[in-house]
Structure formats: structure tokens, C-alpha cells
Amino acid sequence: MKPAVGSITQSREAPMQPYEKFLAEILIPEDTLQARIRELGEEISRDYQGKALMLICILRGGVMFLTDLMRSLTVPHTIDFMAVSSYGAGARESSRQVRITLDLQMSVEGKDVLLVEDIIDSGHTIASVLELLKTRAPNSLRVCTLLDKFERREAEVPIDYCGFKIPNKFVFGYGLDLDEYYRNLPFVGVVRPDKYMPPD
Image (cartoon, rainbow, N blue to C red; front, side):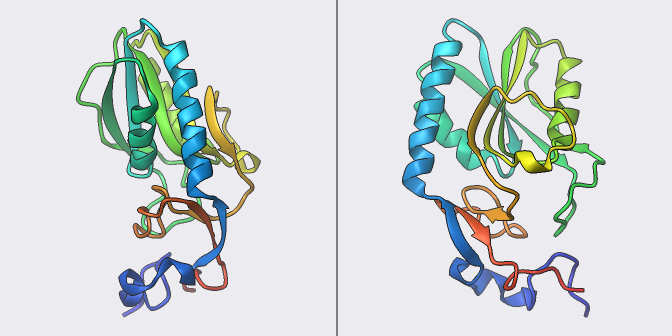
């Protein structure tokens, strides 16, 4: 049987492979990540004093960032989740065709909404989500991303809070997956292209 596009070579072995097999370098170590997230939490807490802060996390990659960011906030806030599809299984490039696969459970009307993302690269997905949320009449709408792969930007996205600007490298760990695996790693690593390539 032909392996799925974008899967690991010998994909049946994927869950048993240690991440070190695919790791070229640790781009952002755990202590650096956590220190920066604490700084973001302090900044956001100052900016949202007395406001109806609502954090919206884009599943699934943003979950780890969201939970650590929440712990760093000192202001009351609510959370909700959205799931958005634009890549498809195993794909490495955005299709630009964005669809909502899980919508919010709460209304954003009159809320001060902060969209929490793991990474922004081309910007097409987040730009589409922002346009959708604007139609729902929030009091304010801002973006917080852990990683900004700015070299790949194609759509204009206003980023209000950014953890790290990173080069155009294929990264994984800390919520970012390799075909759904390795999200649990506490650091952001760079993939070895010679060890992890979609099959022909």
C-alpha cells in the first residue's frame, strides 16, 4: 500500500521513533520559551486591566502555549477554542482554503478578544479567522503568536504580541507536530530534512 502523502518514511514505525532521529537542532530551548511566555503574560496583563479579556486558541498546536500563557496572566479571562483546516494531512504548504472545523462555544460580542496562535507563517489562515471574528462584533481583536515565521508572510496580519521571530525552517515541538506526533516536546526544534521527508 502506498504511504499517505506527507507521512514519515516507514510510517508504521513513526510512533516508536525517538524525536532525536528527526532533530537537526533545538531552535528555542525550554527555559528560553518559558521566560518569554512569562514576559508576554506580564505585558498582556498590563494591557487588559479592567477589560473583558477572552483568549481564543486555535487548535491543536496552540494548546501548550495557551496553557502556559494563562498561568502567566494576572487578569481574569475566559477561554474558547476554534479548529481551522488549511493544510490537510501531511501537507507542508497552506492550501489557502480555510474552513472552520470547530467553532466557538461562546459569543465574542463586546469582548476584548486575543487570538492565541502557535505559529504564523504565510498568514492566510489567521487572516481569514480575523475577518470572521470581526463580523461577530468584539470590542477589540488582537493577535498573540508564539512564533512568527515572517519570511513566509503572504497575507497581512497585525501581530500585537510575539514570542519569537524565527527563520524559514521546518520546526516541531511545543505544540507543533510532525504529522500529529511530538507535540509534547518542551522545546522548539528544527527538523532534519534528510531524515523526515514526504515520500514521492
